Image (tube, rainbow, N blue to C red; front, side, top):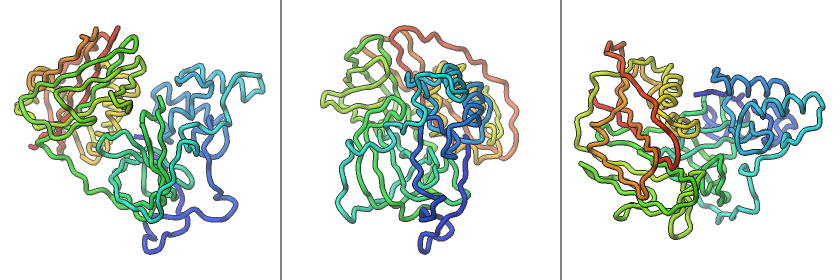
Length: 385
């Protein structure tokens, strides 16, 4: 994961070593991100173009940035065309560009509902974006929501960290955005932050999520047949899911609620095959997964969803032994989609941490077809050794 740290600002009461409040000095004025400013220095400049070029070339970059900030031509995609548009804009050539605009998803006051005074709660999140006087996070459990925390982070916190945050709720945002994929968000004053004590249960098949991409808007029914028992679903699984799926992957239920994917967790009764796979240094896990998941047919957004959940658990280990399951998983978790997709991609990773390198035969991976109506699923399980 990309990492970015910020300087220590003012202390928040007794949490001196954890959280800093935004200072009142002019140089720490409230930062409103703008399209084109990828490195968070309040300017759109050549350094941002270089950052975008490296990111598109899959070269490690020192800053995490929200992809919507790089969509300078506003076509909904981040491609080399954004680089060209950005370069032309910097040289003064007239181009159609959104550089300098604030992204719509950031804070939309028209979509906000003020909270009642004094409402506080504590939540476990994964940090997804760090800015000068705020940071963003998404729940560890894959609910369709995001959080904006109004406080500057001290040095040491990074994108991808799992943290427990206590907030005073300010407002709720209702939004459906193709980049963030969330349906609503919460903004609040950060009261405290500490490392999350959330740990994986080795008996749980975690976060299989199902994406549906029909070629035209289609009502789709999804059925699971498990050798095991469901432990959690979202939206609620009631003899299956029936949703209206759009080509961009948006799923809408009968009540009009939208979701980026279908989510389930379960205890499965199966023995996984770990005789072949890969041994990867913990620090190299993100790069490894980015490469292999693309081979297995996942899109950039699906890979980002996958790594955002798994890498924080895995990068802390000296080594990880990883094996992608086939029949052992699909036999225990049968998936039926109606109407039948043209392409079905199911990626399920099993892994365990190791203090030393483990030798095992390399697993051969094949790239599936991804054409027509496509259904994609990914999930994983930490194995107890």
